[in-house]
Amino acid sequence: MFAGRQRHSSTATSRSCSRRSWTTGTNVRVGFVGLAASKLPELFADHSDFVVAGEPENAAGRLFRGEVLRGVTDSLPLDDLDALPFPRWDLVGLPAMRRRATWLRVRPLSGGFPVLASRGCPEFCTYCPHRILAAHRERRVAAIADELQELSARYPRPYVIFRDPLFSENRDRCLALCEEILSRGLQIRFECETRLDRLDEALLSVMHRAGLRAMSFGVESVDPQTLRKAGRRPIPQPHQRAIMTFCRELGVMTAAFYVFGFLQDTWSSIAVTIDHAIQLGSTFAQFKILTPYPGTPLWKQMKPLVYEKDWEKFDGFTPTFRHPNITSSELMFLLGAAYSRFYVRPTFLANQLGIRSAGVRQMLERWDARVFERQSRREIAMVSRAVSC
Image 1 (cartoon, one colour):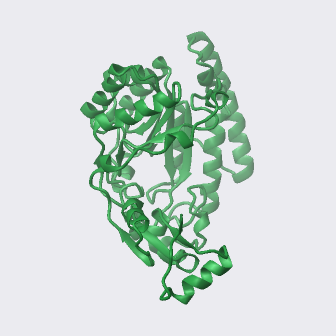
Image 2: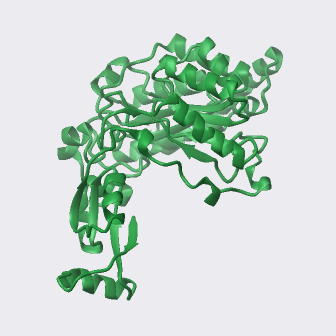
């Protein structure tokens, strides 16, 4: 949200004047930016002087040059990301104690420094909002390294969260950035999000030397046809397992994302996906319910099925549409079962503790089987059906 002071002429609308008088009583104008504001401006029109449609920098520059923004204001995307100045990192520093990680996680409790090496996404997943405001663009490697160097000069061993949807899309560029970090002697730790088929052992080794400590990625579903219908390219399961094994050897924490409720999904197909999540053995897993976000191709396809009118429930954890094969209550139950089956098992704790002994892990896997039997009995008692494939 923008909230900026501007001088107004006598021709300012009465609507804007009355809004200012009951919100703050001062000469402050209010505007909204972001994906929701861009795609659903009507939700914000009665509560703001202007709504920015698109990336905010173009509109912000006009605002700061004195232009009075009104109503829905189009804001063109930036072609050159390197034209942006670095953030004022001196204003967001953290005390040394709050930068420390804990034994169960590498990200400090208070978070890290978010850095963008690119914007947008080159993929075509129909359900993802990353690409609907503007095309994929990349910053120069040298410019990214300069920003990391400034961070390192201000804060010892900063923890960097690269916010790119696909950090290692361009293998050569990713290697060049890691080599630049190493050649400059930057002592950083970082995490990123990417696709597993954009990783290999050689690349991961260099990324780890440069500071990679955690990584997230999408698996979404086990079924290749389901993924293709959603515009997502499947990744062979043997490659998924190989990358997970190598990440464990390096000590890189991993978080896998899964989505339930694709139109082709059934109870059994979701159960298979849950089983795959457990077998894949990422450090963490996040399960969500398919949510058609306005502006995405999925929204255009599924709009006739959407029954939810409360936008606050479009949170990824609440059913919002009529599924052809699964009821909303079943989707919620399967979501809960996925979390309990993944996290309430002995081998999950073993992964956190880094236990690699074959004998110990075999014993823990037998305990896993007992836990799953108990969970199945509980599931049958609740819905007369176990979440198993």
